Image (cartoon, rainbow, N blue to C red; front, side, top):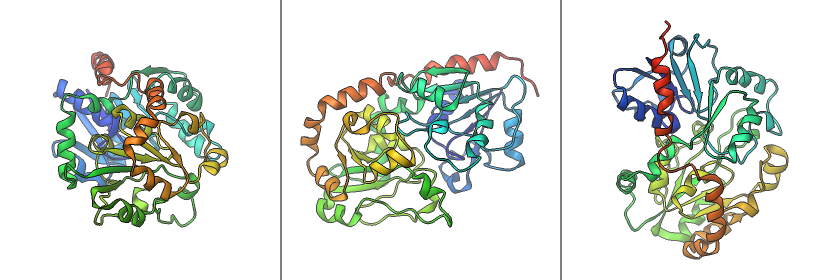
Length: 362
C-alpha cells in the first residue's frame, strides 16, 4: 500500500506526522511518501521518502496513492485514482471563520479550494463544537471522524516530561527560565498585500526583555503561511521557533502561551498551562477581516489584552492569572478538549486497515 502525506505544504509535522509515525511503526512494509518543502527538509528523518512539494514527482505520487493524508488543502492539479481514500485532518479547532464562512477572500480562491474539498473522503474533527462548523464551512457531505487530533496524543503520552526536557535542552532553555510561546495567527490582508511585505511581531520584544529580565525567554512562532516572510528573530532572550518542526513539542517545552486568534489556543489548553490573548486588532479582525464563530472575550481561558505593556504585565503574575481564570479554563477544556485523551491515532487505525484490505489499483 502507498500512503502520501502532506503537512502545511511540505513540513514534517502535525496530524500527518503523528499518523505516519503510528502507522509506519505498525506496518513497516507499506510505502510512505511525504511532500517536502526544501526549506524544511532538515526536519525530515533521514529514512523518510520525500518528493518535492510541486512538480511531476508529487503529482505521480498523489495519483498512485492508495491513501492520502493532508492537514490543509492540496492546491495542486491531480486526479485521485479510483478506490483511493483521502483523509483531510485539517489543522485546528476553528475560532476564526474558514472557507465559505470567511468575510473576505481573493476572487476565485474559494472555488479553487473547493476542487480539493471534492476529493476528500473523510474529515477529522477534534471536538463536538467543531464538527458542525467544519461540515458547513466546507460544504462537506462525507463522513466526519470526531476522534480528536492525533498530533495532540504527545501531550498526554507517558514520555511527555522527557519530551519537554529534550526540547528545552535543544532550545538552550535552563530549568529556571519561564518559556513564553508566542503564536500569532496570520492576517489575510497582510498575506495578500501587494509586494509581500515582511511580517513584524506586534509584541514589543524590547519591553518584554527589559521588564521581565533573564528569567523569561520569548519563543515566537509565526503562522506557517508567513514564516518565509520574516527574518529569524534569535537574540539574547529570544528563541525563534517558527521553523521548529512540530509545535506540539513546543507546547510541552513552554510554560505559558500568548496567542491572538490562533487555533493553537485549543491544543495548548490540554496542558492546563496559562494562556494570554494579545488581541490588539480584535475589533477589525472579528468584524471585517475574518470573523469568529463565537465571542472570544467571555469564553477565553485567560485575559484578552489590547496592548503589549498589558501582556508583559500579565506575564509577571502567572500565579494570580491562573487563580482568576480557573473556572473559565475548566469550561474551555470541557468544550474543546474532551476527545484529547492521547488515543486519537489509535481511533484511526481502522481506516488504515480498511484501505490496506482494499484491492490495490495501479
